[in-house]
Amino acid sequence: MCPALYAKKNTCAKEKTSEMANLLLRATMCPPLQHQLQLRSLSKTLTFLSPLNPFHTPAVFRRKMSAKSPALTHSITLASQLARPVRIVAAPGVSDLEFWSAIDSSLFKQWLKNIESETGILSGGDLSLEQVLIQGVDMFGKRIGFLKFKADVLDKSTGKKVPGIVFARGPAVAILILLDSEDETYAVLTEQVRVPIGRLVLELPAGMLDDDEGDIVGTAVREVEEETGIKLSVEDMIDLTAFLDPSTGRSVIPSPGGCDEGLSMFLYRGQVDKGVIAQLEGKETGLRDHGELIKVRVVPYAKLWHMTADAKVLIAIALYEMAKREGLLPPPKV
Image 1 (cartoon, rainbow, N blue to C red):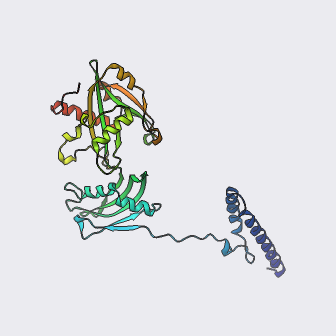
Image 2: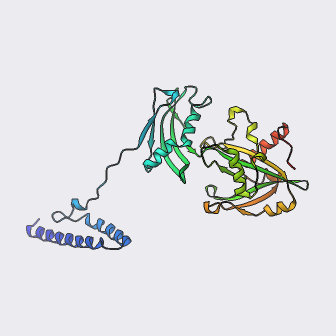
Image 3: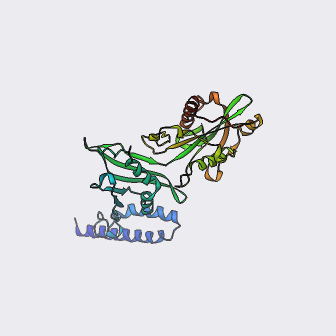
């Protein structure tokens, strides 16, 4: 290239760089949004500018990629596999606080207890737990409400992994409320907005345990009042899952392929006037400050089994009818 022509281009590049630098200085004094837009535009322009080589990016304008911080890790030793510690790892985006809270949560501890129990997946020695990846934590106030993780469980005979994605939410309760009125039995349901399925659904009053104390019956009574306005006492509740074999853990597991939730199913049966049925129908309830948008619905029990797809309703009907057939239920309260 001709020296004079190169010098001219070099001078032009210097002037352009100086102009961009002035724009960059002014951009730092702009409002936040305008600042961001100008900087984004400048970064594209400045990529191609240099006082010496128009195709070389000056170091001062290069985007610096910070080195990835090492993943959070921890190891635990299980009694069933003392020689093989289990590595616990945090997925990208999981904070230090979330990681250690997950490991210390009752949800995770109960899962570990389950897999090492007499009927647990590690009890036979054919499987081993190699690693757990903590993927997500949802806090309900100061406690963990939902915990998502992936467990690498290895089949020793084949060397293959067993599907192990876990959505942990812990124990919950559901209550079948049957009210007898003028030779008709009615079931009290709730109609709620359920975002995961994208629609309204009729279901039993239900709720998760709010703490680690395991007050299952107390939770059932509280959920009935919050979701229907009906005040019951602990003595009014009949535990339908108590009739199950002890090997089941005496709880119902709606979705064992992906979720650890175990439901304790309760029954309340009483007699009321027709006026009470009318007052309940359409009543708006729920904890509005918690986002609960609930309406009470009252339907004839004889039609209940085909009026909703809620698994809790169908499970409760099955348990109730079988317990009644076996003569396990006390007489209805008058």
